[in-house]
Amino acid sequence: MKITILGSTGFVGKVLIRKAIAAGYQIKTLARNPDKLEDIKDKIEIINGSVFESSLVEAAIEGAEVVLSTIGPPTGKPFDPYQYEKAMKDIVRIMDKNGIKRYIHIGGAAHQGGENEIWNFNRKFLRLFLNLFGKQILVAKHLEWEVLKSSDLDWTLIRPPRIAKGPATGSISADEKNLKNIKVNVEELTDFILQQISSKEWIRKAPLISSE
Image (cartoon, rainbow, N blue to C red):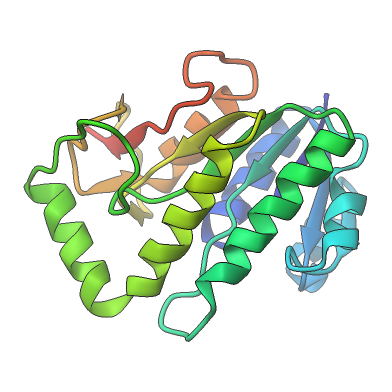
């Protein structure tokens, strides 16, 4: 199967793309810094560019059956959240144009958007932290979700809390309304992302993900 991975040089993306290679997927990726993929460049197709350049996004997406995205706003740096809204609109438009339906994207556990969600201590703490130190991240991720909800794509928006390194716990919680833990292991998160390629369980849904 041919897939596209956007955001393959970030913390989550680097783990995800290596697992996708090991799983046997034919992979095309969009990377602003291809040098970060030097050790696997002979196993994937790399388009050099940014998600904010729609022509290069189209070059990366064209021919894929599924698009995975771990793209996220920078932490601790100023940015325009509406850039991410536009990028999401471009992705939706390009996927529609190319007849590609399945899109799997990472959001965040602290932003709003769902109905009748449970705001327990874990989520309230995460939201308070981001309101203090990364409010624009909340805005960007909420805008992305609004674009997805109005699209005709078979999307899944995976909403993790703090993403951590270290050994996997062996168990992961996925729930539309309730965040059970304040962190998720990057290994388990990337396994869950790849599982969504063939699963229909979370289509047009936004599960909150955490390690148990």
